[in-house]
Length: 401
Image 1 (cartoon, helix red, strand yellow):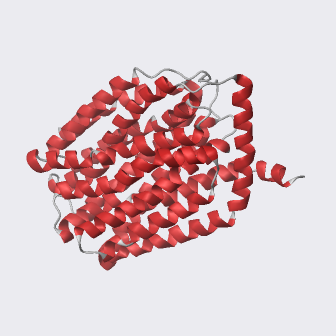
Image 2 (spheres, helix red, strand yellow):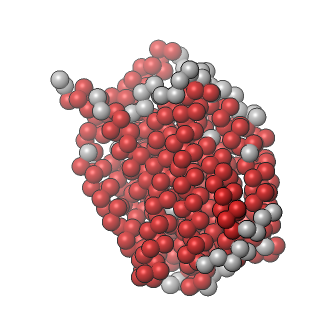
Image 3 (cartoon, rainbow, N blue to C red):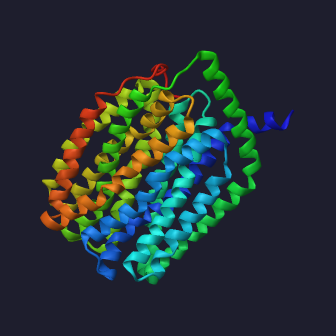
């Protein structure tokens, strides 16, 4: 059996490897919102400055991910996944050792650059190892990122109260472990990537498949809106718990974990539902429920009930993400790296780019008003999903794979 044939066989193993890599990358990124209550209390920053750190996490990443996606289409570089995770881990781990706001801002941007290196290549590789079940594979990949948002704040909730903000150094343990694994497998990943890239090119040529830029741009509008809503939830729910519901810093930070657990479950499910019921249908139904649930949350002051409501809010916000990524790749079948860079990178990072504006609204009019604005964006996001069209091969299946 040739080396290429051997490498091509264990696709499920590589799919879960992409999931683990995504988890380690976003495990680090998740600590930006998780650290905000601690930074507000211990570094004296205001809400606008806190939202500015979310902007730092997304700004550089947003700008360069489409470019990196284009480069990924021209030449596959699976080693960038490990390198990106390394930079992200080093950037976030250093936050606890800095006192100056702009120094923290800079290292968060550095971490965002590492995240930008990982995501286009990771999303493209997740598609390469997917086989026919694109929705399922992308759900697995996306769930890894959401699991990172679960594990990261848990590490913060344990280490920061115990060792202070310097406890962020604990994030280097899973970071280094994942980097070692990815670099050890870089040759096998390169072979698999080359095999799948040839298949994509041959299939696109045989079927005369063209890129549908109009449909792709309409999809991106929906993803932009979803990103703003998700980022607003991740940023303001922990602050809302501390500033309005009067919970402790530790409990407020743990709300990121609640959000991420619900998001991870939805991410793991969304693509599978889309494989069965259709990608556009899942995206529309999920987004239609977000705004009413946020409004309901703001009408309760009971902490337990509010926590319960955060679960479906987070789940419905995330449920349509994996189907949207797959649709983007189907709209641009000849540019998988670019489609991944935009749908996983640029479009998703737009939420962080809008964080400073939401933060100013929170400072000027209160956190409740800022979250009402997030609800309004959710309504616009739902309306934008109505413009999405099914891809050529978006055929619902009879059973979930």
